[in-house]
Image (cartoon, rainbow, N blue to C red; front, side, top):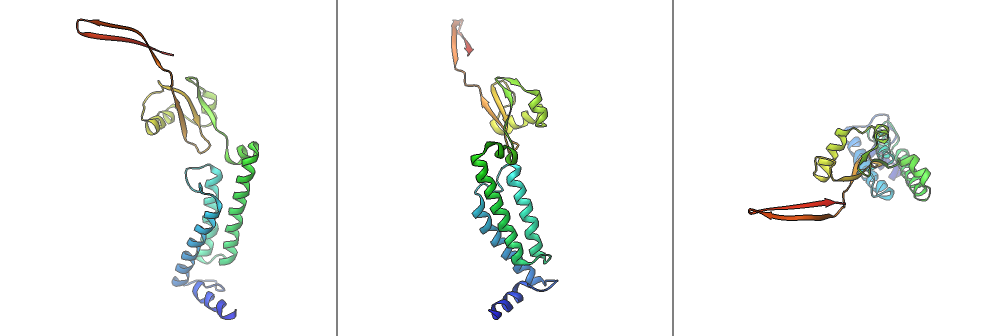
Length: 189
């Protein structure tokens, strides 16, 4: 047991206040691999386009693990702190599955910013969403420049804006052919 500790001490600089270049590189590799393992046990959506709930855990784990890499924190104590954070994140996610109020508290709530073709200025202001933000998301999300065919829009929990397009079917009102020109009048309902 003592020999194993001496080997780990030499590789990772466990008892030293300062770590050399080799030990810092080994700590970085160890933290990287440990982080991947810990996070894989946490959540598949972790660090994707997610809510602040998911984003915060990434920042906190990065901060905690950086201490182990640069030698400001004990290596295995830091790993246990990372495991604790991921388990806490997992626990909050499980509670959120069963309690909508708790989910809204930690993950946020989707809000309707356009309802039945009408902008809800109060919800837009609450979500700090401008018309320019909506137009940008229209261009990026559904390749459209105007709200003309958008029935509803939602400010999602992750900050993205999603759109429900108009699903009205056109009805042909009138077809005329005069002097080689065809005219079709339609009505959207």
